[in-house]
Image (spheres, rainbow, N blue to C red):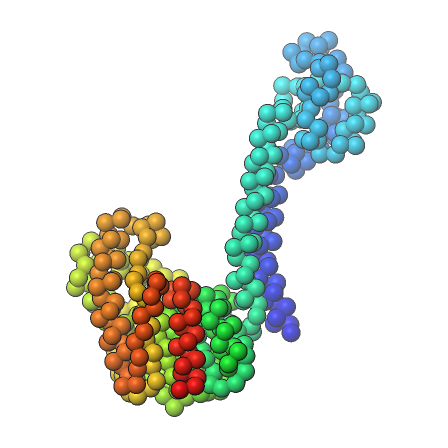
Length: 391
């Protein structure tokens, strides 16, 4: 229970922090909350002003104008404490608007601009909450498990056997499996988890990691969480490499596998053969700069050495097409077009080869889907998993 309370606090803390900084902290910085910006409220500054400046500025040779009414110089909405302001006006009469803009309130035009900007600033944190709250709430629906010096986050639903383990793609946290998890939980126990350094999972000590490191972490996680096999492993993208390594090293515990538009161990070498030197240099740099610090080339070599899946029940799901937008990766459009072309040339070849890793396999093309099949066509993934639960 204490761990769950900690997770709830971790989930809401970023939202609270953003709200405070955007709605109050920034306003104070630009001086709209004058009590903090100038060290005192407007009534206090007026009270401390010299008598000549308050009541008879013209007699002192000041160029300030004495207004006919308070409304000509003060925007009441800009006053921090309206009651205090009214009391000071009653005591001192109309107040001259000084050349110093911090005395006498904001001009009406500035005040209007202020409230327009305030409205925009107020909308931003609300939009952030709406867009990110579902993922944060999903990350509170689980537990932190100590695997020896650091913790890993795992979230399980449902009951029964075999246990379905959902392995996320590179730089994800696992919450993108939510629709698949909710559906499969009606049939058996299903879990997603976050790899080292992602979501609430603690960072690993290694500066560079590989798929084998991730498979070792999964082994410890399932043991420490007391989630015994048998397992059906479901891997998306890079997660498919982790799933294949785990299955190779724990073949007695794995009774089925679904590979969702999964990476291939020869993928990088094939790309290098077909891409121009410029496109390959940019692509390899983009893929190498990942939040998990994964060495993708070394990971592919590890899987290549592992061998096939023999007669393990296997479903390979291939996206119909994959298109990356230039604005998503920040590279020239010509390079993106070249990579998209080569990707869609290689995908049918590599995914067919994955299906041939087992003598008991099926290849499915998810029509109308991009790389994230479990988001574009969750029904295809759910049906594939259910087919392995009841062959």
